[in-house]
Image (cartoon, rainbow, N blue to C red; front, side):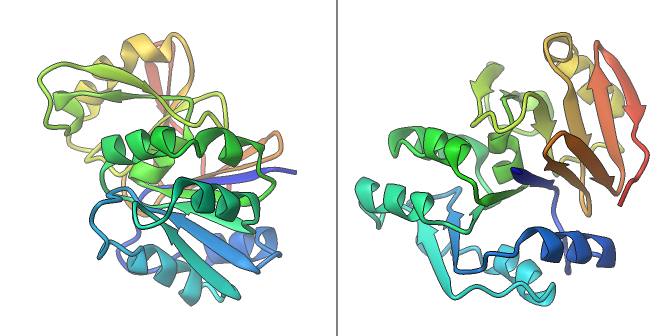
Length: 218
């Protein structure tokens, strides 16, 4: 059963309920493979995201970071052998380009590993996402990107949603007529396990231009 975690951002650590379910889901702890969102900046090593798992008591035998230091073939081998895959937060566009350049998206989609994404990583796990100035990107023209497509919905994660609700709803309305969009800010998670979707924190669903707050199930 495939399991995917779409995370916002956690300033400290996972809350108790998220610790519990992630401990239950991540039983194979041989190899954690982290994918940089700024692959040219080698000091971006995923220490914060790794600390969340450490504090949750999820410790792996091996830790690997994929960036431009690795050859493409070596990166692909790491993904094939991963127990868990963590797409790190940071620069959504650079990570999306890197996934495509290194041919990682299809491998991640086929993997039986638990896949986790934080902020930018969660956005790139989704089927599609919108890059626009109104959503915090330094661009003049709005562009729709294809993500990995682990699940058939879109994600906007770790955005100042509470103070920009109408703007977010308006900007995402056209895409919401094509697919559901899960939007959240900090301390939130959407967990997909098989056909079941669980919600942690304040997560909203935009569907057919309508927005509603979802009930917490974790």
